[in-house]
Length: 428
Image (tube, rainbow, N blue to C red; front, side, top):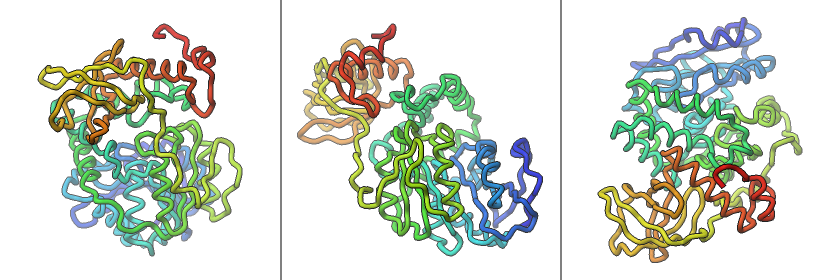
């Protein structure tokens, strides 16, 4: 491998180098402090639509101590080559082929979001080529609710409603109920929404291929054996902290930490907090026990992490209606309600379809829902949050319910008057 030694963040906009492995095109940029650096390189494997520009800050931080390679596999990032026939395992094997073709030493992958599944699979299938591993947003997609939302996004795309699709994706990546804590600006949200609304035909094809690849994935039958660091955003409801913790518990040598006041985009929202962990980890140093904005979870507690991120309680008004896609309505009783879902009972006596429902709650606009499972206790459902206005109205409704019942808001326990004072606004 011959590295470039003239790194400047603006170069991440340049055309990447190309390596062909059979019919597959891999694109990459490689930097180091000297051109023939023999140290273990850091290998960035980003989310499905993350460009190399997303990592300009991290590359600048790491170059003093490590060579850095940014890699786009077929159909990922800026690599536009369609690859619908490739599985996650196939893509992980292409990473190994890349390392072999360029005669690299064992690498240190940083896998984020969709890239975390690829990086983890690579580490499992090719342990001799993986020196250390850092994961965030572990996308194993074993949780039924996550799978349903991904399937729903594909269904909306097939219907041709790009606006609903874009809003649903944004609501998955950015926790709408925790904007105050995560500090994500409206400007960033709008920019992300516009980007998704303007996806080209080839971009939509790539999203469909990537999503189906995740849905086809049967799960990990082995876990990484190398030193592994896993970080999760405290309010990540897309790939939840407890899922990260369970993955860490299955690894041979893993450490796990939660980044406070962050969600799925933790490395963007709380860069200094993340840097306190990944810089010493990649250098092989012991992680600091106390880090500002970080909560370390000990190994014996990994499987005890709370699974439910929000309180689910009876709503102020339990009576509701369930509307089907053909306009028919049935009486429903809300047993539990939260911002992301709840439990209802209905007079409908047959098994309910999963898709095609709206929940009509007093004071609120119709809310799109998907039914996760049904039992004698009722039907568990999740909100799709594909309608921004309806989602915002639900957020205010839920926050009022929190306030009146004195439930936990963030990590504080507030009295009703304290919670109401924080929520004062035109929609209360």
